[in-house]
Image 1 (cartoon, rainbow, N blue to C red):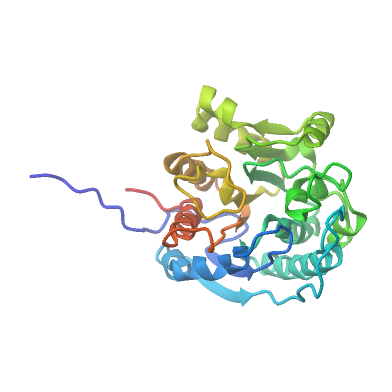
Image 2 (cartoon, one colour):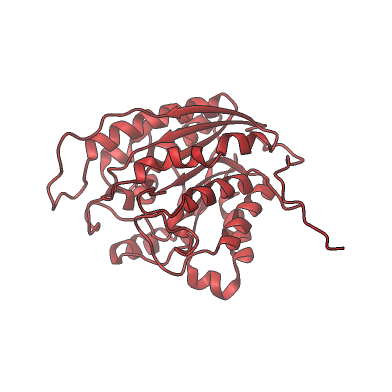
Length: 321
C-alpha cells in the first residue's frame, strides 16, 4: 500500500524569542514607489489566500490590523524627478514605522504585507526603533532580485522602491533616511542580501564601499542555497536581538511567481525559497517579517499571493512532517 505524506499545517514546537506566539498582520497597499498598477492590491490577495486562518493553524494568536490608510498622490511627478512621490512616501513610512513599533513594543511579531518595497523604509525603521529602547540591535536578511541600493544620484528611474536598502543604511534622501527620527537603521556588517541578479552600476559602487554581503544567484548556483542561507543567518544573527526579514517576490523565479512588476529570469525556485524560510524558522531569530511587490494585475490565478502565504507559513515554522 502506498504511504502518503502528511503535509498539513502543524504548530511548531518552540516559541520565537521576543515575539512569543502572537502575530500582528498589517497591510500596506502603497504602490507609488514604483510605476505599475496592481501592487496596491497585494494585501487583499494575500488575505484571499487565507493567511490569517493558516497562521492560526500553526498555533499562533493572530491579529489582523487591516490596511494602513494614507494619502494618495494628487498629481504625477515629472518624468525626470530624482525621487518620485517623496513627500507621500515619507508620510506613509513615518506612520508605518509608528504602527510597527507599537506592534513590537506589545511583544508581537509584526508581519507587513505590501505594497511595493518602499514600505521597508517604514516597517523596518519601526521594528528597529522598538528594540533600540532596550539598547539592542537587529540584523537584516533582505531577499530581492535587485540590490535596492540606488540613491537619487544613481537611480535610473527615480522610483523609491529601488532605494530602500540604501536608505536603511543611511544613504539617500534625508527625509527617508531619517524616518522614525534616527539613522542609519542597520549596520551593514549585520546585513545579508539574498538572490540578487540585476544590479545597477551605481549600486555596485555603494555595495563595495560598504562591504555589504550579497549572496547573488551566481553564488547560490555554485555553492547551494542551504550553505548561503546558513551564512546569511549567521551574519544577520550577530544582532543582539535577532534580525528582520523582508522578502520581495521578484527574488523568486518568474515561472513560480509571475505576479511581480519587476520580473528577472533565473530567481530562487519554489523549493529553494521554502528552504530559505524553513532555515529562518529553525534558527528562531526572526523579529519581523515582510512580503512585498505582489502585483495582482500580473498574477495568474493568485499563484504569487498563494506562494507568498506559503513562504510566510514556512518562516513561522510550518514543516512537512
